[in-house]
Amino acid sequence: MKKNLFYAALILLTVLLIAAEFFNKTAEKSLFAFDTVVEISVRGRECKKALEECENEIKRLDDELGVNGSGILRQYNENGASDRELDFLIERALSVSRETDGAFDVTMYPVTVLWGFTKNEKHVPDDGKIREALSACGYEKLLTGGAKVDFGAAAKGYAADRLVKILEKYHVKDALISIGGTVTVWSRVADVAVRSPDGEGYAAVIECENTVLSTSGGYERYFEEDGKSYVHIIDPKSGRPAESGIVSATVVTEDGFLSDALSTAFFVMGEEDAKAYLKEHSDVQAILITGDKMVVSSGLKIKNTDEKYTIEVLD
Ligand code: ADP
Ligand code: MG
Image 1 (cartoon, rainbow, N blue to C red):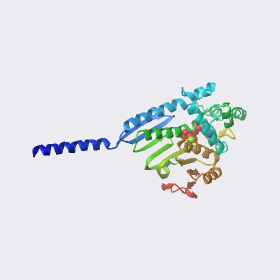
Image 2 (cartoon, rainbow, N blue to C red):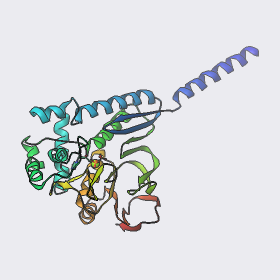
Image 3 (cartoon, rainbow, N blue to C red):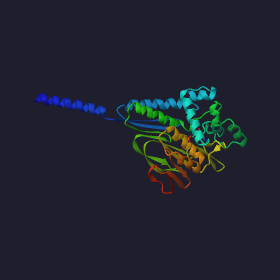
């Protein structure tokens, strides 16, 4: 009898151990890359391996795609070298540029440098210098390799897409990843807050599920001169910091690259053109903040908004 009890206990213990092994664990990591804070939280049996590979991938992409990295983008800008990944990204960038009438343009680097955004020597340059810098830009030049490239407005979104591949590989149960203003909600539901463009707190809280949310705002990287502020997002038509009236553009869509790139494009395009784009692309949702107004795609699940905004729902 005692022997039977012993065996029963042993079987129970084995079952519990197997169940524990199957039980999904959580692994979390915070690191600095892409000039911003990256936070990764994954849940699943192989969460540690998945997390480690995500971290390595982030570091690899930061180096490969950063203008100051030591990877392929640097080589492309110096001597035209490329590889499959860069060709793919240039192709995608070209397509977003065409779809946004050039508001998104990864060849603005000479202009960004001129305004001092890259070296923290921000200042208003003179008109002649702006025209000169602009003549070296233009997304059409990507077709002939005739322009320098800066993926600052889409690399974080692309990184989000790459990390999802790793999550799939390790059968991760669910994950939450933020790379600066680009947040991936994978295989779960999460409330994501959109920061208030003029100070503390949030402008809106969105319930997200299986999607990527990116916000572009002029409130984080900007400078002031003679009482006027200048943001780090350039209007490719003028070679000057964007002044479209939009102070914060959030784009929610499954594709990370597109989410990141479009949030920058909308910031440049302004309310009317961004709305026109949204009307034609039902798979893309957005929140556009212009002064006291917030334009919200009807497909978004908004949990909360700052009372000071008048809400306009976009069908
Ligand atoms: P964040 O700085 O939060 O990543 P964005 O995603 O909007 O914000 O990217 C802004 C960066 O993209 C700039 O710092 C610059 O490197 C680059 N950039 C500036 N203007 C444009 C533009 N019109 N299209 C594409 N990239 C741009
Ligand atoms: Mg962007």
